[in-house]
Structures are given as structure tokens and as C-alpha cells.
Amino acid sequence: MKILVLISNVPDTTTKIRFTGDNKAFDATGVQWIINPWDELALTRAMELKEAGGVEKITVANVGTKITEPTLRKALAVGADDAIRIDAEPLDAYFVATQLAQVAKDYDLILAGIEASDYNGAGVGGMLAEILGINSVSAVSGIDLENGELKIHRDIDGGSQLLSIPTPLIAIVQKGIAIDPRIPAMRGIMMARKKPLNVVPPVDAEARTEFLSYELPAPKAACKMVDEDNAKELIRLLREEAKVL
Amino acid sequence: MSILVYTENWAGKFKKLTYEIVSFAAAIAKEMGSSVTALSIGHVADDELKTLGKYGANKVLNVKDDRFESLDNKALADAVTKAAEKEGSNVIIFAHNNEGKAIAPRVSVKLNAGMVSGVTGLPVSVDPFVVRKKVFTGKAFANIQIKTDIRVITFAQNSFEVVENPTEAAIEVFDPQIGDEEFNTVIKDTHLITGKVLLTDAEIVVSGGRGMKGPENWGGLEELGDLLGAGMACSRPVSDEGWRPKEEHVGQTGKIIAPNVYMAFGISGAIQHLGGVSSSKYIVAINKDPEAPIFEAADYGIIGDAFKVIPQLIEAVKEMKANK
Image (cartoon, rainbow over all chains, first blue to last red; front, side, top):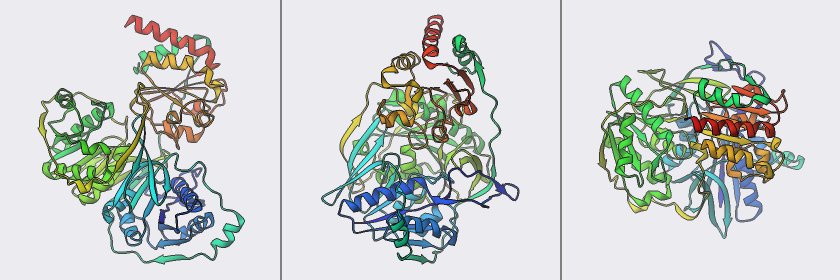
């Protein structure tokens, strides 16, 4: 089985978010880039499956300019066998999915995180499945491989399900897929330098959406305090002031 | 032309979220001079389908086909696409939840539509079609134009006031004629936690953190939750320790919820926790530590011992219910 893990290059989740030029663009000055946390968990699970046997190869792919290469190198250091970078500015989810479609055809299982922590789009995985005309399953919280067959665990309202779905398949993964992301070891970092990172030119595609402007949220009003010994007052406030009880 | 709403039901009853989206769609339809068609897939009785009219649905397409119970993403996307084509829909709205995120992207490709997910509130404008959403996990908002003639959006729960907008909803049985070969998802086993309020659709959520000190201390919280008809939640350390089932974990890596009131007992409010609850209309924090970050996010707070506060709240809710 060959696995492709889609990698989004995102600002470190502790980044202070700023915008430039009349709030029309994200200010990337001084930003530390990381593997999108969900994609990192997907890659971790792919590694675990490979170590258990039955996975020949793990490839990671990203649509981005040269600035995403350190992030792809990190994915190689975690343990992916090779990397593909499609050399384009990622304009929107549809654009990215169209680019990925040209390199995603030869894999049995494609893993995508449920969303990227920058634009919270949750679109690329499903769009890619539709473009390729293959099965997809979302809200995946576990993947096992038994005798070459995938066992997919999916979260549903009020519980979970065990599924079987034929490959090729895109699994869009969320909480539970792996416990903690794997940190590259020194040996992995050394080996990553020699692993192939293939740069592929983009295909013609257009974005269907356009980010016009950004705003920072308005500061929140101060928390209204109620005395510990007069906690009943809280219920009165929720009922009469907030009107939610 | 119409706006198509993908509805969701829980055991045959529409979710609160579905009514919110129908209200939202009705408001957009008014601006665009369009109408609202709701698509129901599953076993929903006609009386319940009619309730969508109360919030502004002009028409309900009722798909009764057991094969969709497998929630096969591809087959569902086909069915929604067929409905959108039949209705000539130029806006298709899903909830920004597990089901919506699974289907909407596929539908957008099929309809050559641009898609924006997690839309918070009415479009900034309908021509051009510009919507607003949270980005950077709640740290900012973005205004995004969808440049295609057909638009797919997923709607972030609790970002539109449910309003009644009574119309008579015409119910029409609809068979999207999806072939068996489109259904490839096979359910081997289902594990449901029954008899509880559905956490992701609950209006009130009662949640406990490490400050509750141990699983044996949840009795008071459960009593309060029962009295309020609330969903029960917890912080990550609590689910990691096995004090509470992992299904109750809310936060960036757990469930993302947006109730009317989120009541946090003994939860310090790490940024990862707040990431899962920050869309709640009101956040209430009870914590011993006055420096706990949860107070920065909270609307109402009590600095104090949860074990002293909970019995008072139980009593107050009992009094409130007695006086109603």
C-alpha cells in the first residue's frame, strides 16, 4: 500500500496574527512555519502503519512556494520516504486540490487533516476526492490496516462507527488518529537531507474565491464577577440579563 | 432559483442547528429575491418536515432511501448535487460540522462552485457574494468573495439568531436516483452513547476540568446538567485521565461546540481548550484561581471553590424551574 499525506504549511499556532497593507494580506514577517497540526498527526499515523508492516511508501505533498521546503524537510525527518512540492502560491482550496490531483493518482490511501490551522478551510480533501472521482470519508478518528484491508473509525453524532471502504480512498482525519505528533530524531534529520524532494510545476487552474480583507476581533467586554457565597445570582443573570436559561 | 439547505436530524427530529440554517437561508433569500428549499435525507415524519416552514422553508425535498444511512460521502454529494440542479440552486448551505465538512467540498466541485467554510453571519454583500468567516482558529476574521455563479458555504453554528418566518412548506418526495455502485461505505459496527443530550447540538453545556479533582466528584455537575437539560463536556486532561469518556472532550483537538451557554467548572482555560468553545454565546467560568485564563474569555465568572458553588446553582435552578 502506498500512502500520500497532504501537508499544509502554516504559521506556528502561537503566532501573533497581524495584517499588512490596509488589512488586505497576512503579515508573514518573522513567522515560524510548521506542519499543520492535523497533517502532522496524519503523518504520524501513516508512520505507525508503515512500521506495523503492509505500507511500502509514504509520500508527502504540498502546494507552495520555496518557503514551504523546511516544512517538507521536517516531514521527511519524521519519516516520509519522499516529498513533492507543487511550485505555486496556494490561492484557495479548489486551486490547491486541482494542483494535488496531478500527483495523487497512484496512491491507495490519501490522508488529509480535517482543516489547516491558518484559513480553517476544511475543503481540500473532499475536493481532491471529487476531482479524482474516488471515495472519501471524513471525521476519521482511527485507521487500522489488517491483512491489507483498511479499517476506518469515524466519529458520528453521539458515537463512532467502524467502516470498510474500498481503496483508493481519501481519509480526512481528526482527533484520535494519533495520540501525539512524532518529533524528528537526529538520525531522521540527517537522513531527510538525502531524501528526494521533487518540485513539480503547477497546472493551469483558477481560484474560485478571493480573500478581500481581514479584521481582528473586537476586544471582549470584561467578565462580570459574582460572589462565591452568592452563586445563585449567576443563575439570575443568565436568566434575566443573558436570557439563555 | 433557490437556496438549498442540507438539513440534519437526530433520531427523526431536526437539530436546532438545522432551524438556525433555515432561518439564515431565509434571510439570504430575502436579500436575493429567492426562495428556500430544504433537503431532508432520512426518516423524518411529515409533521416534522412541516416544522421547517416555520423558519422560512418554502419547499422540502424528502429523500427516503435507507442506503444513505451509511453516510457515504460520494453518494450523499451526488444526491445533494441532483437536488441543487433540480431546484436551480445558486447557494447551497451545509452546517460546518462533521457531515457538512464531508459533503460540501465534493458538491462544490460537482457544481463548479466556489466554497467558503465556517461562515459567520449574513453575507457582507450578495452581489458580489462576500461572506465573513473566522480564520487563524478564531484569532481573526476574513471577508471572502465567492466568484462563481453557484456558491457552496458551510455555516458556523450559533452565528445567526433563529427567527420564525412562517411559511407553508410544500413537501415533495424526491428520488435522486443514485446507483448502487455509488455506495461504497460499509458500516461494520456502530457504537452509540445513548440517552444523553447530543453535545454538539446542546444549548447549554456543563463542563468539568482538573479542578474537579476526580471522577467521583461529577455527581453535582451531572445533577446540574440534568436539571438544565445540558450536554456534558470536559477538558482534555480529564478525558486523558479517563475520568470522563473521550466523547466529552471539548477543545481544539476535541469537539468544537457553540452552545448558548458554556459553563466551565475547574477549567483553567488553556488556549487549546478555548479553541473548542470560543464560539459559545456566553461563557461562564468557576475557578479558584483568579489568574486563570478562562476569565479572559468568560462573560460571567465566580472566583471560588466549585464544590461550594455547584450546590447553590442546583438550588437556584430548582427554584427557577418551580417558579416558571
